[in-house]
Length: 160
Image 1 (cartoon, rainbow, N blue to C red):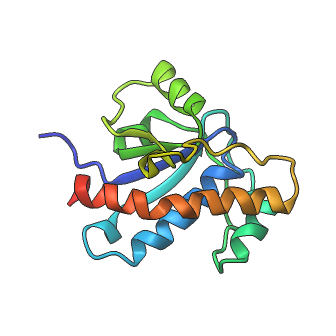
Image 2 (cartoon, one colour; image 1 turned 60 degrees about the vertical axis):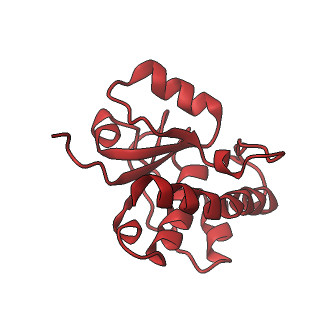
């Protein structure tokens, strides 16, 4: 029998801006859900990340505005070990999913963009705010927060 995958992986490039914000927002939302959703683990990683870099100052500041603490985040690269535990992998842009499919194996069947489940006229990609001002990070966070209900609905269908 296949090992239970109970990890949701949010991925971006350097694991210091988008994927850590997505991780915290999704963790917060899932904590409010009944079991088994509130037992899912959410972790972030980067396709070109190193180990141990802190979240960007503006990512920390953007999440602080919604009472979420990102100050202890440490970056990590995407590894096969993380992939092997993942039930769902959420990329910020299609390029992240393309890199994943090119360089890794044993991928979960659920590979999606973070905003993909919103459908319709919504842009499914979340552009990189790296090096921009706090307003760009706040807009990035808002784009993620807007997608959370659609991700929760997806998880209710797929995981429960």
